[in-house]
Length: 292
Image (tube, rainbow, N blue to C red; front, side, top):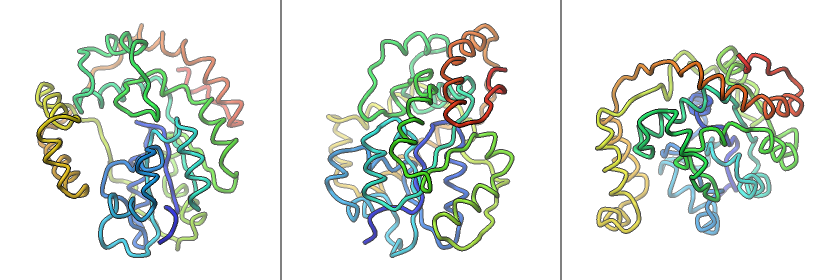
C-alpha cells in the first residue's frame, strides 16, 4: 500500500479548494476520497492507525493501486499535519488562497448552512469570534472568520516544511482564470498523464439552509454522547458519510446572499491590510487587488 496521496490540497477553506479537488479527481486514472474532507493527517488517533486504515475509511473499495488525490482545507493551519504529509507521503502539497474579506463572509454563510453558527448576522459572528476556542488541529466549525484569513504565518510554515518542488500555492483568481493550466501543472508534478477536466462546472456554490433549526438539530445528534452517534459507530464510515451528505443536501436551498455591509467590509480590509502585505512579500507577488 502506498504511503499517501499523490496530490494533497491543504487549504484554505472557502477559497476554491473544493472546485480544484473535483477537477483533479476527474482524471480517469485518479481516485478521490468519498468524504468531503480527509483530516487523517491532523488527527493523532487516525494517523496512528496507518495509511491502510485511512484508505479503508475514506476511499472507495475499488481504489486498488490508483493514484490518489485528497483534501483537508484546515491542514494548512496545523504544522504537525503539514509535517506528517511531507514526511509520510510523496504528495505534492497544494494551497489555494482567496481575498480574506469575501472568504470570511463565505465562511460565515457555510457555518450557518451546517448548523455550526447560531449568529443571525455576519457582524454578530465576527463579534463572537474572539471568544471562540481554536481547536488543535483547527476545524472549520471553529468559525474563525478573520483568523482563517490571516495566511502569512501558515504560508511561512509551508515554505519552511515542504520542499519547493512539492509545493504549489495559487490564488483563487488564478484558479478562476486558468484552472486548466493549474490542473495540467499538478498532473505533471504528480506523474500523471495529461488530461483536461471540465472546469466549467460549478462546485461548492453558495447554499442556504431551508431550516437553520433543523441544521443545528441534525448537528447535535451527531455529537459524542448522543444515542444516534453511538448507533452510527457500527456503520462503515463511507456509508455514514453518504447518509449524512444526503440529509444535509435535503436541507439546502438556493442562496442569494445580500452584499456585505460597506462599513463591515471597510473594517475588514483595514484589519487584513498588514497580514496581506506580509503575505505579498512571502509570495513575491502583488495583492493590491485584495484591498478593494
